[in-house]
Length: 258
Image 1 (cartoon, helix red, strand yellow):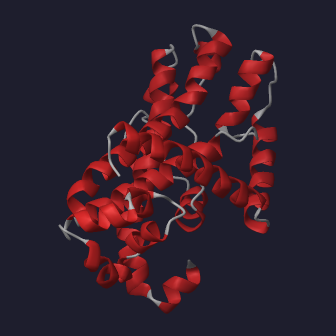
Image 2 (spheres, helix red, strand yellow):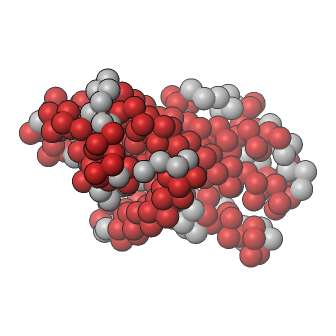
């Protein structure tokens, strides 16, 4: 990404014009969902501290947001919660922990469904019949990457019926990709990610307690793992392809698109 910015700044900014709002929306709604469900469970901490908001400036973590832009996986500043205020203990903690990733998966499904509907008007009937919509919407397909990068617009123009809809489609594809990646990343059972809380609540009824200092050390260890190895990134990429490769054909059949 950094090499791309240096070599083709205009192309990079063009790409980010679609990716940036998708990232901001995914991160903001993820954290808002945590705070809202905590509030519904009896904890007003997020509301009292002004974090029960969709304002992305209240939620963004600098390193996590940069990672989200450059690597496709990242995080926001965790919404502060006080589990001692929950009415139903670990059961409410499980609801709060799942709220963010559930929101991301819903956004992934919604963006995918909207992209399917957009496809009916965006691509020429002959292109839809010849290539199939999976060619344009599947994350591993050439058609998907052709749409993701604005410099390919001349090539794409050969298969477009309503060219201006390509701007909408690019945003929807970014929104689907970003939300699926964010949701899967946060399900990793590693402190301080949501997946750790989910495993702790389901398997141990919330009995594993870690202080803030341990969480900070684990966060640093996770950062080192992310930026010095490809282990997490490779796993998330495979998971993204696997999940979307299963969900997309189901949605295409459901909406009788092809």
